[in-house]
Image 1 (cartoon, helix red, strand yellow):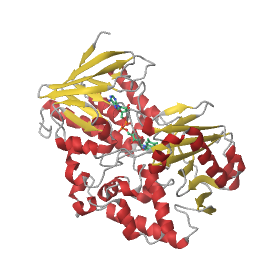
Image 2 (tube, helix red, strand yellow):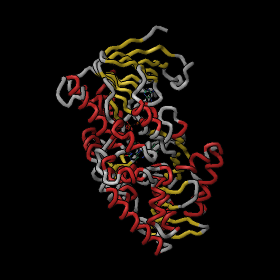
Image 3 (cartoon, protein in one colour):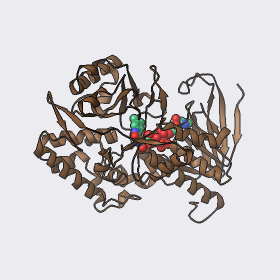
Image 4 (tube, protein in one colour):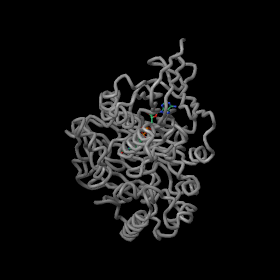
Length: 476
Ligand SMILES: Cc1cc2nc3c(=O)[nH]c(=O)nc-3n(C[C@H](O)[C@H](O)[C@H](O)COP(=O)(O)OP(=O)(O)OC[C@H]3O[C@@H](n4cnc5c(N)ncnc54)[C@H](O)[C@@H]3O)c2cc1C
């Protein structure tokens, strides 16, 4: 097939929230921009879909909370409404074969454990607020913090096994990893960026406060609609040649319906020449492209040492949110279970019931090969224990296994291994010649979230605009 050659001032690789936000700002400044995305859709980790039973679900990011101002402003601009997460009533704790009800942020069946857990969360937040958001590697004691994991902090600060178990559930839900996989410095930075662990774990007043009526992908689609044919889908980038004269991104333009991850799918070779490029995806995915000349060692090492978390998002749909009749809010905390945290994810009008939950961290990796039937059985057994026999007979169980997604490879976010931030942190945003880096992982506020993706894209667009104009601070 004939090669497709395009030229533009700036090419953006990735049409998730960050890439689209970057491209939109550039286009609004009259820059000739093209956006490539490997998938046949925009949105990346934001993916709204209709299930086989006909329910609309968010397979990826879905919640918006207070202080996520970039996200709220975009939703308002596009006329996308939000509604509150259902939180009325009690949560269920499943632990050691017992079922206990609780009210508030964390289970209280072991009151001493609950007090220990809350004190530790507050201590952690106080430590987090000491870490500078734009340069965590400059925190007081950065090297010592980065030489530890969050697990070592828990070992030193949590006396109670039950508090530890509850906090591990929260960590898995937030990061998609266990606490032993996270640099303590990174964890503190991330918590600070989202207003603290208490804020990240909360629905009312916190990160899970509201959802988008009709799904979060509408916001990505709204940005893409403004960009029109400047967005090219089914276009996996594979190679990046770069130098003082600009950048040449090589890849494939895959036929609609063909698998972009399969190199043998029907396609045309694609080459895009530009003065600058923005890579708007997680560091690990940036690291999979073939660069000529090779990326500086520090940038490549950073890409190697910021692995994705592991998460399978599970939607269990029912004909009604029946647990509400029993005064339950749909939240389960189940340390050690396959799906250790759930929420009531029913539509605003309650026209059907939906529980959403996360199989995360090691459970996600361990159960990957077990098959959907095994996971379904584990999930339904726990839902039955929590909500009674009606939970056994859902209309459907729909999984989104983000590890298997070739153009995401995990989720919800990339994390930082011990030692990586202090050794390599500045390489996170530092341009390499004409190459710039966006993606939620580069954000200084709400890192890892939709809001952080937007601000990261806008920051990268600003960087590129200044560089194109040759302005001081334009990084060249
Ligand atoms: C299960 C789950 C739940 C989440 N829940 C929430 C939530 O409730 N609230 C919240 O705020 N955030 C949530 N998040 C996080 C949020 O979804 C992300 O922070 C955000 O979507 C990241 O946007 P991004 O643009 O940085 O990256 P991405 O969305 O990952 O976009 C990167 C894009 O690059 C493309 N790409 C990759 N490789 C190539 C290539 N070689 N060539 C071309 N294109 C390529 C991908 O297809 C993708 O579209 C969740 C994430 C997951 C997975």
